[in-house]
Length: 97
Image 1 (tube, helix red, strand yellow):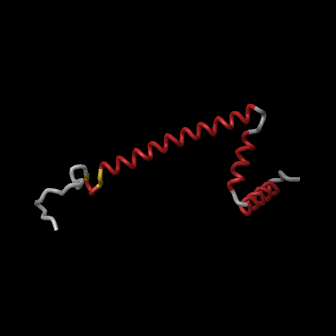
Image 2 (cartoon, one colour; image 1 turned 60 degrees about the vertical axis):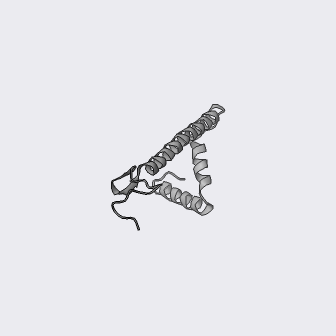
């Protein structure tokens, strides 16, 4: 067991630690990874926007495509439940025949 007065051994990060024992290097690594992923996410969002623009350019309705994409993410039971709820609300408002 190390004595309190002894200098830290190799690999000890006491020089880079802040209050609470947080490693500045490790924290910086997490932040940089998150920043990189945020950049990638923004690039992907731009690519998706381009695909919607392309679809719109050839005559597709992008609002409907967005709904189709959302529906495809759901399982069949969730889709059926969402449709039944929509029908119920529309019927209550007198929108459906």
